[in-house]
Amino acid sequence: VQLQASGGGLVQAGGSLRLSCEASKRTASSYPMGWFRQAPGKEREFVAAISGSDRTTYYADSVKGRFTISRGNAKNTVILNMNSLKPEDTAVYYCAARISGRYYYIQAESYDYWGQGTQVTVSS
Image (tube, rainbow, N blue to C red; front, side, top):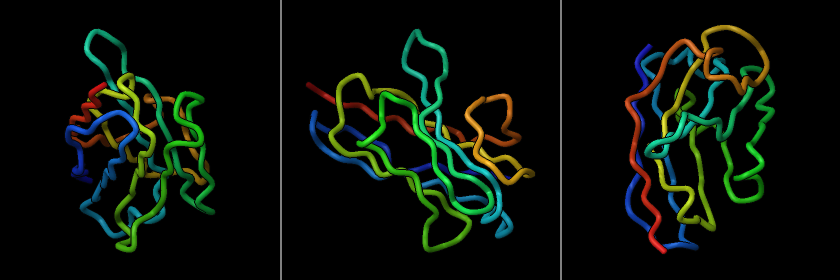
């Protein structure tokens, strides 16, 4: 499975961005998927996840209420809508897919495939 992330860019604090992750297989509509991010000098951290079955979602406390993860209209895509962005949201954002399981997963080690990353920069 190949994952293609897109939608990153430069935005001012308080602004919004929409990240998209397209999977190469249509069966990805049933995969648990997640978004992670890595800022310079920091470890990769969990951002948001969506389950493989009933689209249950889960968020890191740092983004709860500002970010929304959802399945796209094209069922092999996952969207991360990011609102009220802060400079501390600056990072490379990665999408990830797990090819089995019904739940959401917040550990990076739980995922089987990763996208190439897309840069998000929030200026103050």
